[in-house]
Image (cartoon, rainbow, N blue to C red; front, side, top):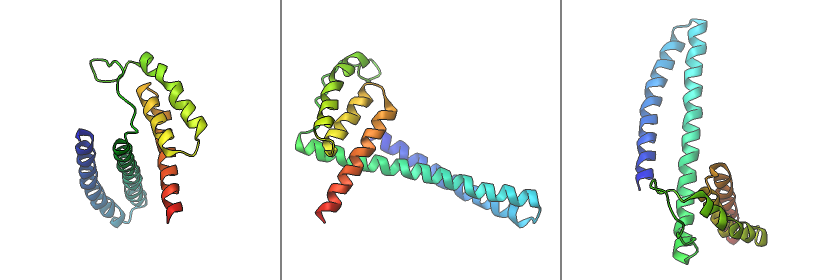
Amino acid sequence: MRNRIAAIVMAVILAVYLVLVFERAVMLIATGVAVAIIMGVALLVLPLVAAWAIGRELLFGVRTEKLVKILDAEGGLPVEDLPHRASGRPLRDAADEDFPTYKAEVEGAPTSWRAWFRLGLAYDASGDRRRARSALRESIRLYRAEQHAKV
């Protein structure tokens, strides 16, 4: 819940920023001076790229949350019995011991979004955020393909 609130606050701050930057960009473009016009155009483009990136991350969060709820309802989430640091993060060595189980599950069922999701959670517990996000994205892709195939 705390992450969701933080994401919403960041999105609101970005929206305010975009409005202010847009206003400044229009003012710069309206001057008619070449350098000011270039700066104004840059002020329009760069915040749009930032808004796209944040929107993508918010969508990623919504989709992963949906898959967590489905797995939780099915009883398919991994049991959290790993020892933790004071920060709440699992101890990496303990997480690394569980990792081969989830990797083997994906190798056995490469089109299972559930297996990919659990692998993403295992990568995250091991501290490999890049691979965790990649596995979770693959899980989302497979889930969406499964849903489209049902239609």
